Structures are given as structure tokens and as C-alpha cells.
Length: 385
Length: 250
Image (tube, rainbow over all chains, first blue to last red; front, side):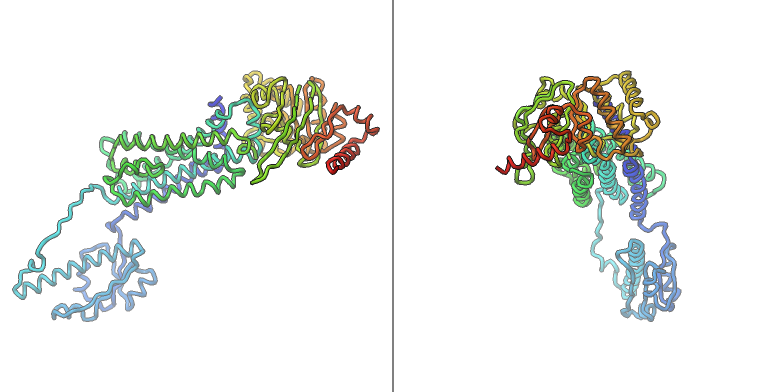
């Protein structure tokens, strides 16, 4: 009986264009957009060409300061700031009229760098230009000190050597932030229409009364509906992961370099699938509860929206924490633990204790929600419109 | 046989209680067709839902063929067909056949029984042409026919109809009336609520009149006509209401 009801619910859900759009089409569009956005974000400017606006009066020797960077194209203008304002250049550089002459004389001169720090391209170009100017400044200082018979090392009593313990690049970090967030949102959004339809929708259309008039046990009905919502969540989750994996593998470089699972690749895939299943089941239980409490589909949507928004908060917490800093509570709190465990897996870390804590905490929360839902589903007030 | 004993049903509406049924007591014999009359909010649908085991009485009890609606709900459901008015309670994205097959499965019918029953019902209601079309595209009359077929799919002995002809055109209403005649011949027990006195007069053996949750009359229709010296059920109902209101006022 359970299987037959489940099959009918799945068939019914996938005949709804909303379910098809939100559980299949939306994850593909959303993941494609985000994958390419993050790929661009993770780019350090290498391979990209930037346009720098400079004054008409710039000399050849001044241009030579930037000559080492082949990806910088110069636009000469009487008003470089206006060129940047007009969007024809990502940044602008204004050297004082007597820049070279002042340096030769050993006098102080000025350099103005114009740009928009809120723009990724502009800030990247500004950082490249700053680096070029800093190197040029060091060269001038060394040369002046040598001319005065002073050892340049006098100005640099020690060298700071920074050692990075994390072997991961920006790609891994962005993936660890992007994949769990997208997965949580995609599963939530994908499973929602069927969750609304199976309880609040059935109350609204009076099919719930017809259903309750049959001799089928209410717990069986509840279980089959919950399994259907969970399955749609799992399907959405798998599509999301598939889309992101294919796109990262074939269409990105930086994000691809962030994925280095080594020999554990299959184990990580399997564990990710387990995480998707457990989260889909937990999410289905939550959506089911909101749909039981609601009298109409609209009401169910109002209740579930803030719950889905909860899924965004752990990103803010987890993205600023190193993978080695994740503590017990990160794995014990449902929703947050999905972000934590996926972060570990994306960094190639398999910690069975953390996986177990995640599974058990989600399972416990799910059982509590399910029991509560069952209590409501057995009461006239919550099953009749 | 349906025995309704001192049934009271209260609903909590925010902080106060609303009494939808007040000590309702009457008995419906096997094979009887009862018309349930009353204004909107009189308690007709609540009474039908309580008989149908969907609602639990706050006080009193209902026994259907000896089974208690609270303790033995599953046993009662096997032999009960219910159609609530207004919405037809069908799945829009399933075809008429899929709807009927789904409910047949829920009532535990075998594949063969389901096929035979769908053939019988589709012939009876003239649904063969649109049996394989999705219900979402149907007219109200077509939907109502499928909903009635769904109610009868498991061949129940007791059938409850809540305002079944509301919103139906004259042809569909006639189909329903013919169906009730057919079901009466088969010895089914039928209770249906209606605002249409002519329909009740034409189809029912007895009537139960309700007002503000109370049963103000239950009895044989012919006896009622003789007692009231009129065959105008509308007039009788209105005069019963007036007398009832006088009684409440005093």
C-alpha cells in the first residue's frame, strides 16, 4: 500500500510543471550561473586583459614601469578619471607632470590611482598597478641608498616569511561556500511545491477528505507523502551536484583546481550522496509540518519561506571558519551540519565521527518533527479545511 | 443501520467554543433514503462528517451496522461511500481512470475488480469518452460524475451525499437522481443533504430537519405530509422552522 501511494504521489508531483521547473530546470540554471560567477570571482586576473587610463603626458620611461604586465592595455586621455567614470577603463593612473624629473632629482612626487574597490575587475587592476609601483619604488630607494654608499638591507632588518598551512586555494574555499548553499536552497525550493500540494493543497481541493475516508491508516498516508517529498529533494540534490560537477570539470579552471580528492573521490561522492539523502529527508519533514499546519497552499508558502531562509545563515558562519576549526556543535546543529560536513568533504577530509554526528542529529530532529506531524495529522482540526 | 445517539459536536473558534451539533438522536434503517434538510450552518455537513468518521463527536456516539465511528472507524470506512459537495475531491493531474484506480487501490480492490467496476460505472455515467483524459480539463458536470463514480468504486452499502447537485446543470442533476433510484433498488442506505426540496421529496423515504445544530424533525416523509396536511415540503420545512424558533424563544 505504502509503495502504491508513493508511486502515485511521485507521478502526480512530476506532472506538475512547477515541480519540474523547480526541481530540475531551476537547479541547472542556478548552478550554471553560480559556477561561472564563482569561477570569475576566483580568477586572480591572470589571463584577463585590463584597461588602464593614463594621462596624455605619460612618458615612455613611465610606461615602462607597467610594461612587465602584458595584460594591461593603456588608454591615454587628458582626463583619465572621466575615462574610468565612463566605464571605458577599469582604473586610472595619474602621475604628476614632473614625475620622472622629480625622481631623478630625488624629490618627492605624487601618483594618483583611480578605481572602484567594489568592482572585482577594478580592484584587481588597482592591485596589479600598486604592485608595479611598489616594486618601482623599492628599486628607486635601493638605487638612491647605493648612490649614498648605504647598504639597502639597512632599511629591511628582517624578512617576513608567511607559511600557509592550508594547501587549498581560493577555488576550494569558494566551492565549500557555494556547493552547500546551493544544495540546501535547491533541495528546499525543489521539494517545496509537492510538499505544499500533498497536504495544504489536498485540504484546499478536498481530496484530503476523500483520502481520509478510505480505510488506509493515516500513518501510512503520512509516511508515503513524506517519502515522496524526500525523494523529490534527493532528485533535486543529485541534479544539482551533477550539474555543478560536470560544469566544474569541463568548463572551469580555477574551481577545477580546487577539487583534488585524490584516491578518496568515490568515497567522497558516496558520502555526499548520503548527506543529500539525509538533508532531503530532514527538509521534507520540515516542509511537511508547515504544510499540515497550513490551510491553504499560500499559507504553507508563507510558513516555509522563513524556514528556507534559515538555510542561508550557516553560510555566513561556516565560510569564515577554517576546516580544521570545525567543532562538535558545527556537526550537531541540523542545517549547519550540512554546511560543515560538505565543507570537510570538499576539502577532501573524511571524518567518520563528524559524519556520524551529522547523521544522528538530523535523524533525531527528523524523528521529533515526524512525531509532531503525526500527532497533528491524526487530529480533525489539522486535516480538514 | 445507523444509530445516532445524543451526538454533540463542538469546535474551538479562537477562544470560544461553537456548538455545531446539539444532542442529535435518530436512527436510519438499512435501505432507507434520508434527506437531510437545513439552512446553511444548521449542522448538516458536520453530521455527515461525523457519521463518515472524519470528525469525532464531543459527546454521544454513532454506530454504523453495530460499529462505533470512533473505535471501529476502519471497519465502517470499508462499507461507506462519501461525496462532499462543492469541490469534487479529485486529482486534477490524473485522468478519470487513474483517479478511480487510485481510490480502488486504497479501498483494497484487486486489479480485476477495479477494471470491472470502472467499466460498470463509466457505462452507468456515460464517462467512456473522457475516461482517459485528465480531470483538470473537465467541466463541472463531468467532474461530478467522476466524483460520484469514485464514491461508489468499492460498491459501499451506505452512501452519504452532501449537496450533490449543487452547481450541476439539469442533465447532470437528472443523472444523479436516476443514480439514487438505482441505488435504492439495490438496497443501499443513502443520506443526502440538499436545499432542493423537490429533489428530497422525489427521492427520500424520510427526512431529518436540522436547525442551529438541533434535530427539529425526523420521520417518514408520507407520515409528515399527512400530519402537516400538505405535500409542499418547502412550506412544511419553513413552518417547522418558525415553530422551532418559537420554541427556542419561549
